[in-house]
Image (cartoon, rainbow, N blue to C red; front, side, top):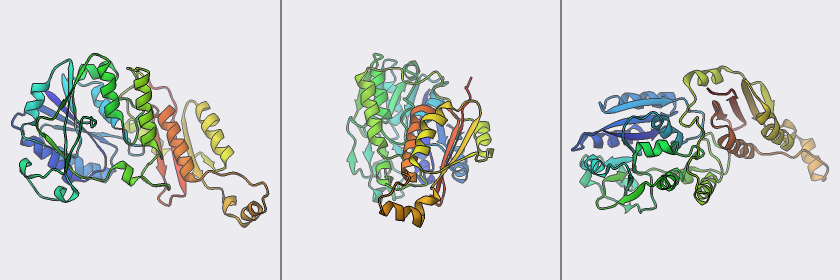
Amino acid sequence: MITILYAYRNRDSNRIKRSLDSLVWQTKQNFNVIFVDYGSKKEIASEIKELVDDYSFCNYHYLFTQFQPWNKSKAFNYVLKNLDSDYCFTADVDMVFHPEFTSVLEEKCKPTKATYFQVGYMSDDENKKEVTNYDNYTVKFLSTSDSTGMTLFPVERLKSIHGFDEFFHFWGAEDTEIHSRIKKTGCELEFYNQKVLMLHQWHKNYRSRETVELNTELQLSRIVEINHRHLVHNSENEIVDVNSEGWGEIISDSEFNELEECGTVLILNNKVEVIEHFLFVELPRFKGGILSVCFIEDDFKTSLKYKFKKKLGKKVPKYYSLKEINDKLLLHIISFYHQFPYTYKVSNDLKSISFKIKKTVRV
């Protein structure tokens, strides 16, 4: 039995239905699906769960990561750590599969080989068509061997290297990075392009949604470049085992509720020294309990007195913008604290950032 893994958050239900319907059409029903909802909004999650539950081969899992950045590595690792299938395929909710897809998967199952597949990309207009026959879709362009996401893995090889690197938040590089590491175990990699067995439904990518201003959608400036540098670092240093023993662990529902119920204890303004002291002293030294912080702009920064003194060249406080605080704090979290239960929110009016973390040792 092959396990197909989906990682998902807040996408429209139509593309999910197209993807799962294409699995219904498979000539060989030699698979099961584990659908990981990585913290969708509750109203969306309810709709998607109802949809997914209609497919007998699917198991839906909701993770309480709504107020954390997207992390496909953690979504997959949550399943991989205890997966008892011999092989898994890391899917994308945008994929529409050829009816022969799982037959080819079975042919490619080898304990010493991982196989990744060419993908045909559809245009936005093509994506809007109501088509039920795979061969009636039109492909705009094809992926190359540089696109590494859609891969059939021997599960034991993934477990031997502690899964996907959980540093990779937001978007980019986790698929290529795990290919690099799994090769170091002696696992062969094959790029399958004899026939286009899957089509990618169009959507805006992360880079096109990225803004230079603070956004309620969690974003971190230049994360794509940072992720790429991390990929290069792991490869140059021939690192194979990247995660801690706690890999695959996710904030639990009880931890999430505990953080939600905790009120704000510490309010910090955006003075440079206040933020840097928090990041480099207060946060690392905090132990045993929940630290709840709200970051706001200092009222003095918008006062006439501040503007007058600054215009005269007199000494005034130095400030970070909330966007700068966002980027500094998120980079700290994904670098040093992502293994702890935490929540991170930007207010709807974009005037504050709240951060809660439970820093207790997880057994």
